[in-house]
Length: 195
Length: 195
Image 1 (cartoon, helix red, strand yellow):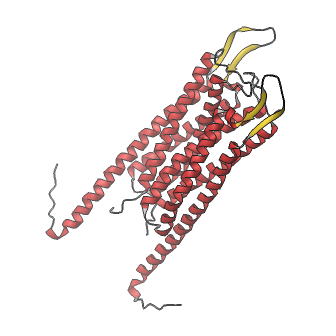
Image 2 (cartoon, rainbow over the protein chains, first blue to last red; image 1 turned 180 degrees about the vertical axis):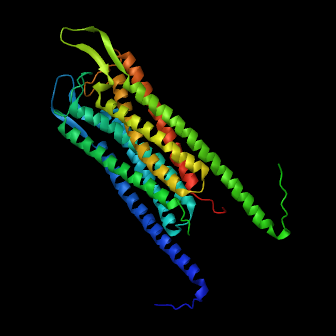
Image 3 (cartoon, each protein chain N blue to C red; image 1 turned 135 degrees about the vertical axis):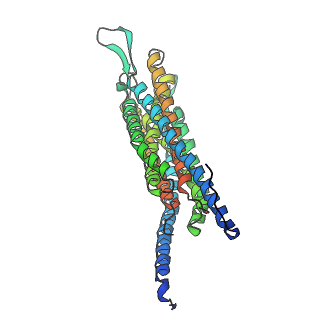
């Protein structure tokens, strides 16, 4: 379908301006849709991180008279914090989807966008804190520390270490996605001067 | 000094609009100046964190034939990372001051503001990661971990522990300031609809 519009010569400037606005709108729509897709990816990676960490549990096949050797995420406060935080991040990202949809439909409404960027920043901090602290523990488990006489436990608890390392990697993916979400929201908040 | 301007009755709407713009501009100017002050606070706290951690070093007054008992930030990779990262954050915040000044002078220019919010987000992630991982190690040093047989070292290295804990607290202050900076930049990026 094509429509013909009679445009008087004098309104060429206005026409050019309208085209620029439409172009800026399309660019914004693309970013807003990418925002939604990135949120889905963030949900997947943070859920994967929480689930992988939450199911990490290894019991060694030998035991002494007094106790069994067992390592699970429960052993480390940091890993418990990790599971709770990554679940919170996943939950927040699910709840943020409707706002992302609203921002796609109404790309010029600043309200939902502002709401998203502020909460994204808060949850970015939360996700980074839990990912980094878990990474510090995983590093210790792999390498130990001589000066404090903490021995590496990954020789014994190989599966446990592999699983927690995987969870840390997944959380870093979630952090990367949240950083991208904040930056994209900032770009979207900046209203075009010729629009 | 007072100036009198003759305003025809018909331009009352325009006058009201101008007042609204001026009011919005004042609100923005206040936030922009607070941004600058918060940056100064961020520099202080991140420098304090880096310096406190970097000078943490405790040698126990007894030693065996083979080695002395010494704990310094060098002992832990995480603490080395902490010192480097917090110095980087302090350096970035110093370099960001001119941009903050430009944003005060020209509150409607979106360029510097966008530049600041993107880099603030990146350095927020960096600061959070180093603060949280150092906190995880400090927590271990205080409490130890039974399952992995890592003993608390703070009984022996009390001063070292106190100093590293202080550095972690200072880094959390820097993180809080960076979160506030990102949120304030988001508020400033959102251009007022009636301006």
